[in-house]
Image 1 (spheres, rainbow, N blue to C red):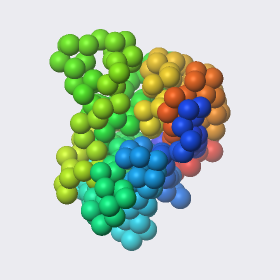
Image 2 (image 1 turned 180 degrees about the vertical axis):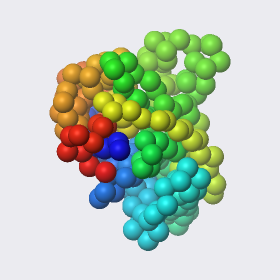
Image 3 (image 1 turned 30 degrees about the vertical axis):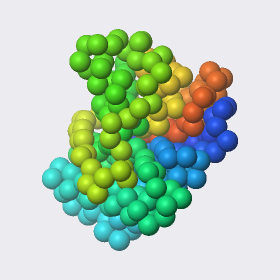
Image 4 (image 1 turned 90 degrees about the vertical axis):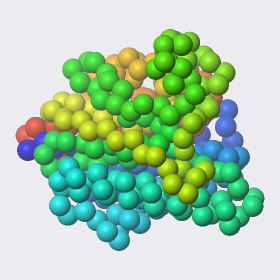
Length: 253
């Protein structure tokens, strides 16, 4: 049976006064979430905090006990919808944070080696396997839409002045379109959830190399944040790192 361990870190970075990112992991390390807020110093941090709190509250009030693919997908849809409603309602009620929003990426680990991911915005999920990396999510951003259309290369996208302009987030509409990803995992795999502050500095292959070089999630978290800071960290950076094993090690499940 597949086992896993997880760790997380967040840092304001080198140029921001406030950290507008938030993350949450369920106590059993079954559910993981990263949110990156926007809408001014107060609005951004509030939006991301509201989002992860809504996901945490749903887990506390309605934890999933049947881990089928359909049930997990329904739970994820409900969690992201609850988070969207919470941010939307607060923004409508409080003029000082009107227009605030947040990205979110939420992952749910089943018992049968399948990880399901729901995301909105440009926070990401990566799979690192045998020294190779794979981006599991599609950024909902203007620049990435241009990449997918063949109008920009990935390298051009990295330095494009509009790379932070997203096309979808929580809190701007009463309902939000959620994108789903499903990945089947193997022992020695790594999954990394992150805000866009990480890939703004580190290339995807560098992220994969760091995961491949370290032995535990804490070490990967520390190195990812350190290298982002060393690279100037113009934005907040948040990472959740999950390491998978075949059960012969002392993983958590």
